[in-house]
Length: 125
Length: 125
DNA sequence: GCCACAGTGTTACTGTAGTAGTACAGTAGT
DNA sequence: ACTACTGTACTACTACAGTAACACTGTGGC
Image (tube, rainbow over all chains, first blue to last red; front, side, top):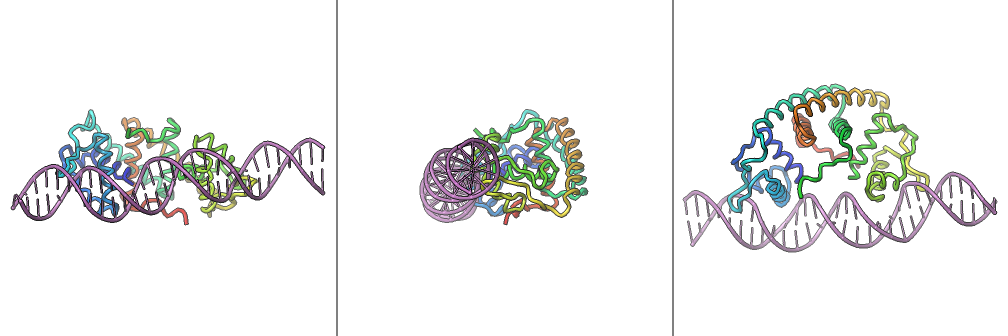
């Protein structure tokens, strides 16, 4: 759950929806919106700080870190182009009558094709 | 982890790699291959039996259930066509320089676009 | 026919990570 | 200084993964 939240924020940053210096909504606010415990959000925030995505200032708030990648602008272009690719693919897959679960399985199967048995786990250390 | 195993088996059945009546490898065998605990595999097997995917026979083994869907053949076709779609999309995304994590985020973002906040949880029971 | 053995799934029990709940501590504006 | 906001720390609970001993089935030898 807290991992999903991290992925969402990471995605927002990559897309440019969140920019360096921006303040993230407070822990309780997020917790209320997503119907989860404040502590769970706090854990996500701490993990993100550990990953260098955001900077936490006790009492002040959480802010998007200044530099999270080497090529901030390039990533946004790539993600936007990629988003179009994914949209077309998903539409085609849904036209075939496949549900979200089947689509996820197909993707995981394809991703595992090249680099098998490498699950995304080495992120935090 | 046991959920991933279930998804893999479900995928294999949908693709036709596993057919009704086929015997699944033993719990310990699978556990050794995937470097996980036999108990974890056992839990996956039990969940799959509960979902009607397989039939467990104490002392004999685990076998793929006779009927798991209404249109066995049609699903295979759809999945195979879908697999081609996904392959092309993934290749395009990788050519853009996107890694697996970014690709997953793009997919999740796209899937959430239409039916937001509906996480895959209603599978069992 | 019967028994031992190797295979199978099953069932306790333990440790650990994630989540929820609650109270605490720091910051900034008034 | 007060107050309303922020993140932090501690505790309890639940679910998952790991470990080991158990129970059932099928096969081969006797």
